[in-house]
Length: 603
Image (cartoon, rainbow, N blue to C red; front, side, top):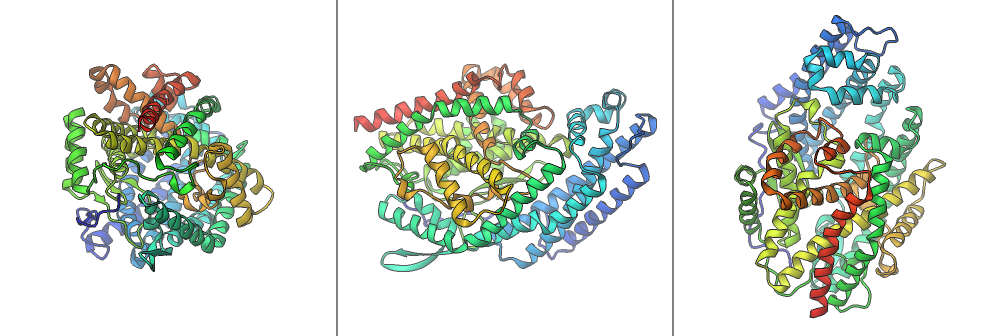
C-alpha cells in the first residue's frame, strides 16, 4: 500500500497559545518566565533551601516547604507551555533559526531549573520527611515526590558539583543531543525511484520500509544505510560524549551502574525488570515463529531486515487520515463518551501534525502543551499501522488530560507508566478494526500489531543489550563507528536468531534511535516493553470486568505521578515482580501469533 497524496495532511495549530514567535504576547511571557527563575532562586536563597546537616523540621522549615513548592509548581506550568510551544516549531522544521535560537534560551533556563530541583532535593534529604508530611498539607499532597526526593538526595554530589554539572550539561550532553536531532532531521537521502535518483528526507525513506514492492524496500534500506554511514562520525561522537558524561556523573553520584539510576528514574527495581525480561525471552520462539510465517506469506525463504514492516494482504483498505480520524473517534466513544469527546476535540482543534516533510523529525510523539491540551506529531502514510500509531499518541494526550488536575510536580510520570494509556487506546482501535475485517484486512491488522510488538519485545531487547554493552566498553574509551555497528548487529543476532538474513541486518540502528541521545535518561528502551505488556494486562482486565475497570481507569492515569508502578499495579492486583504477570500479557500476543500463522498456512 503506497502513501496517499490525495488529501492534505494537517499541521498542528500553535496560534491558540501565541500568535507567533514574534508576538508581543509570547515575548512578554518569555521575559516573565525567564525572570521567574531568578525570582525563585532568590526565594531559595532567602529561605535557605540548600543541603544542611543541622536541619530541623520545625515551623519555619514547613512554611518554607509550602512556599517553594507552590512557587515551583506555578513556574513549571508556565515554563512547560513556553518550551512546548517553541519545540513545536523546531520539531516540524529544524531549519527554523528563530525557533532554534529561542529554544537555546529556554535550555539555559532549563539549567536553572535543574539547579533549583537539585537544591530542593538536597534540602528535603536533610529533613525528617515523615514529620514534614504529617504536619504539612502541601507535603501530604506531594508525599510521593517528597519520599523520592529523600532517596535521590543520597545520590547527589555536593551543591557546587551539582550546579557545575547542570551548567556544563548545556554545552555537553544537551548540546550533543541537539546536534544529533538537528543533523538527523535534515539528512536528505539519494534514492532511485522510477528510474531517477531523487533526494528524500530520512523520515520518508524509512517509511518506504512499508512499501509493498520488495525492490523498493531493498533500495530504500540500502540508501538509508549509506546515508547513516555518511553521517555516522558526528553521530558516534555525540553518542560517545553523552554516554561518557552519564558514566562520569553516575559514578560521582554513587550509582552502582547507569541501569540502577535508570531503574530509580522509572520507579521499579531489578526484580521487576528481571521478571519482565525473563518472560520476554521465553516468548522469543513465538516471535520468531511469527517472522517465519511472514516470510512464507511474502514468498521468501527468510526475511530480510527490510521485510520486517512489509505490508501483507492484498485487500487491506487505505486508511486516509480522515478515515482514521472518523474510526478512532467512533471507537474511543464506544469505550467511553469522555475518551471519544477528547479525541474529537484533538482533531477539531488541530492538535495533530501528520504530514512527513523535510526538516520535520521522524517517528511520532505527544507532548503536553498547556493544562489539558497536547500536541501530537505523526508521519502519516495511510496504512493501518499508521492509524494505530495515531490512536497510540492520542492515548498519551488522554493521559495528559487526566494528569492536568494535579500540580506540575505531581505529574512527573516515569517512562514505565508513560505508555499506559497509549497502549490501551491503540488496543481499543486495533480490536475494533479486526471485528469486521476480511481475511486480508485481518492479516494486515494482525501484522501491524505483531510487527510493532516484535519491535517492542524483541528489538527493544536488542537495544537493551546494545546499550548495556556500550556502557561497559565506553567506561574504558570511545567506541568507533565500526565498533558501535558490531555491537548493534551482535545484539540483533542474539534476539532475532537466524530468522533474519544476517547480511541485511541494520548496523546503524544506534544512529536511528534518538532515545540513546539523552544525558538525562539512560536505557530509554525497556520502559516501552513494560508499557506494552502493562497496557495489554490492563486491557485484559477491562475485558474481564468493563464497568469496574472504567470506574478506576481514569483515576489510575491521574495517579501515575503519585505512586510507583509497583504500588499502582498492586492496587489492581498485579505482582510485577513475578514473571507470571508478564507471561499473561505475552500470551495475548502469542494468541495473535497463532491466529496470524493459521491464516498464513490456510492460504
